[in-house]
Length: 225
Image 1 (cartoon, helix red, strand yellow):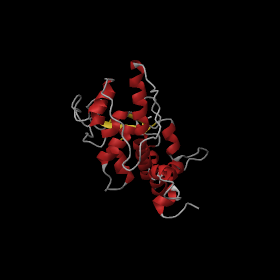
Image 2 (spheres, one colour):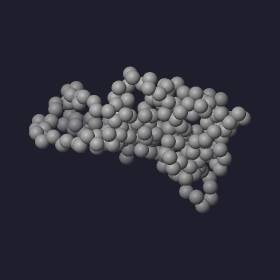
Image 3 (cartoon, helix red, strand yellow):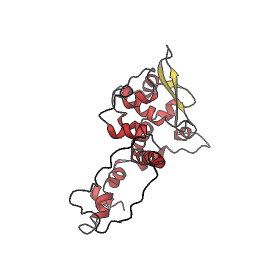
Image 4 (tube, helix red, strand yellow):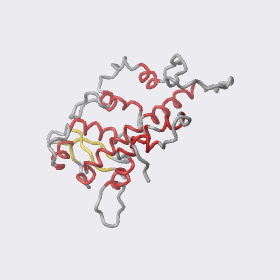
């Protein structure tokens, strides 16, 4: 699961190695995320004041909510909160994975370790935003076991971020005889028609009385079959 601290990975971050992993993800110096109090509280496992119940405008609250609230022991609140944040942010990794597979980054890396500049040079597309590509590779390299990408340092001065394929990342390559490729599965799972269909799931679930359209048809104007 994706670490919740990566929600602001689109903020400014350098191409060069030097900042700590946490501060580079947040795009701020450590401790300067005061304008994200909910993230700071979740990171430090602090107690926070319960927020009032929120409901979608126009959607009435539950008619008969339970009067018996499920209470977590204080020591279990932090792990439970981190699990929820991780689930909320898995879509970030999904879109990053879709992007790097579409570009062909796994095929460029192969069995080598390359900096982002070297990767972009081999992709042969001048319009690629190497800064955004760096952030996405950093996010996908957060697994300590190096499942998709392994982050290290490289470049002429040894101060640039460099990447190689992790264990699972090797299956994102194409054209290897005798080895399956998961690249097509990634591309199919996150192509725009399917991705947009998932965004219509809430309306299809609690607005069924008004429409019988499937989420796919609501998003794309026609059913998949």
